[in-house]
Image (cartoon, rainbow, N blue to C red; front, side, top):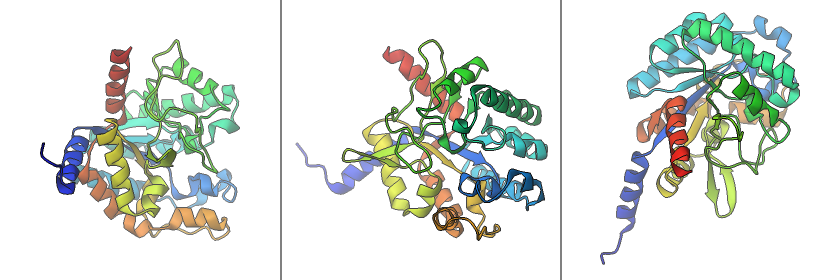
Length: 303
């Protein structure tokens, strides 16, 4: 038997990863709508703040066009109401329009009735702006967890095909560490699919590796290692996300925000676009709904 050299093993891992198509997504919200600033920027003040989301989304669309990839844009209804032509352009370029709720209210801050109204209102505006059906949902700040199991029931009742709203880790802002790491059906009597954001394993410990601040702050090599682990060792797609404000190093600063929030929000903004171009070119990507359909079929086949 021939020994496998490190270079050969690396090439083998890269080839296996290349066969897996990952889910690429953008959580469309502006710089002042993030969870990190929710206690220092009032929603009533949003209309008076500098709107930078359109220019940033346009830059992302150009990047995706150059790389010839399609993605899902989980968009706030609040943003879609003010940028209907942008939402239509996203859809016309072949990307999926999906819901991020109305105004970034975390699910566990809402009652069941309020949540139903929130996603219904967002869906109506997104479908009107994009001219396509909205069948996917991502909770703001991955806020579906053990406190909100009823949220899946509401999503199923309103006809959603999939959610990507669970972070199966422990985190100070969110997390459901007991949740499955990969696609699962949260309801026994509904086809709704949940696609948790990607985690990698370091020994017995789950590590957040699905994009966003983790991708922006940590070295690129970490994300490459994590995606390759999920693709080649586990044969599963990565669920990757980022935000338009993360490619905007010139955005306004919020000096009265907590130090930890400012560190997480502003670190490496000037490097993010280059890192994204690199990861988009290195791995295979598609819209979340396409990956969800593949995962649902695999679950059905395994039963």
